[in-house]
Length: 142
Image 1 (tube, rainbow, N blue to C red):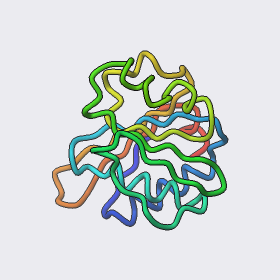
Image 2: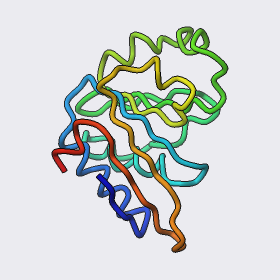
Image 3: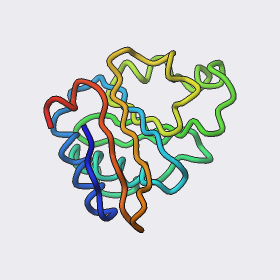
Image 4: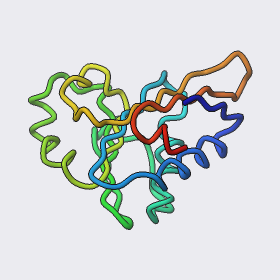
């Protein structure tokens, strides 16, 4: 299912709406170029679960954890070299609990659960506008 977002606020509101349809455990892959809106999506998503501050890109830490109504694991795998590096931070156990939002999952997609949800965020020709595509079971609920 495709959506057009005209602003950061609209991206956050779409994420909030999607979050209403998510039950843990769930893995959500966020795919998009640098600055496309992956962290904005995460911020809106986490807000639904009671996380109202502190959501930032985990670029240099690989993982940020947010505690709200559920545990949210926010990964940035851009710099991750291999699956062993992820295992060192407990990735295998963490994706089986709570909700995991994963930025830059591209090289690890085949290792993630089959029921993962994929959110693609792409720039459009219009400045500030994004095309957001939702793939997976939740797309049918929107």
